Length: 321
Length: 281
Image (cartoon, rainbow over all chains, first blue to last red; front, top):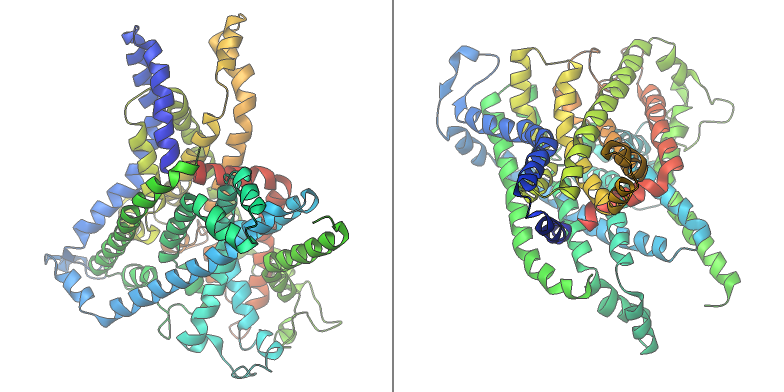
């Protein structure tokens, strides 16, 4: 996301320099800029910054909606309660597991899909893109139900299709233990979000100069060598952006888990913990603390990612326009 | 590479594999939606021969689950369209300023949009839940439209800013030189170029609003505002002893139809919108 922002101000500066003689005009332009952009900016802040500050404030109180009069300031006691509870650590682990596995699978699968779309004959390209956009556009809850009903012990058909696989038979209840429920949850998540990652990678592929691949081919590089030495290094930026976005998205997973297991049998994720604490149990204080911690995790992931990627982004910009 | 017969065969196989990947879960829930209650446990992909039925669709469209489903559908359509409309109007103004005008703070706006788009939705829900109950926005359309803007605005700004940067704005000056007024120049030269980008952005924003589940289940409690994804999760069977599987599947298919239609009609635009907003930026 960084490239265009750095590109653009430069283009604007040359534009602005021309106007420097008319400083009134520049002032008017500034004012107009904020008049046009201001409402969107303010609304974005109002719907996120305000709630997170409020959540932090609430998280310092012992506060249940069922007993609003017993509200009491307790400093960081809620955080202590959560962080000393094994449930938080288990949910964090489940969330991280889902994030790592889904992003890794999606990266490989998405890359394969991107290559297919990139190389596809014109006649099929449109159809492939249309097909791939169906999972992208479909409601996550619908995807969750589709996968749930396929595996479900009573209404599913997976058990009878795959009863020749050791461990799978008519009585296997996929959603009664984490070891079988999590793979189905991840499958639904992967199916639904791989198209997005593959479109990002497709855009990255399109930016790799054809001459480079041609030159490698002339030099006798195998397909795998072309991939590893030419194509992948040249689309590093696109891969980083795709991974970061998907990782942050996967870390917030909620819908699939809610529909398939509702977090039972050790499949609970952090978003679900926050939901269960504040919306179901009405423990606003504790729930707010979970929300703030979850937000802190997302910040931490982005911070680490940006720290690591910055080096790479700077290193890989050479081959780019 | 010249053996085009073999190449065609390979591409046909690859295309079929991609089609199966993309459409199998949809086909699966479509098949389930035609199963009668007694046939649900047949252990097969398709309904048993002769037992395929439309009763699930009848149940949610004209039967006893009608009230539940149709009100949710109305809420989903209304809330998503309004949230999309507001986001696209505000984002158009904002992106125009970013692409076209020189003013300090542009980078701050784009960074804020980025930060908002990675914000965990669930972290916003708790304080909103509490606040909405106090000021009477709980379980109302407005109570969902406002938080939906946190989902639709950032991506709209990014996508539109990327689109608008590619517009040759000199056309506007050229038109003015030719004697058009500022407004005429804008309307005749720029609007036709900008409209496709705005439209594409609207589709993407609509998908996102249409998909919401967390706000939907947390900030509503009745048919007054509950959107379809949330309603599906709270669906119960026609009677206490009947599983809602068939009805949920039928409802899932109905809310997937608009998605498939939009994708079929506008796949090219959606792809370019998604990739420009995310990678160009």
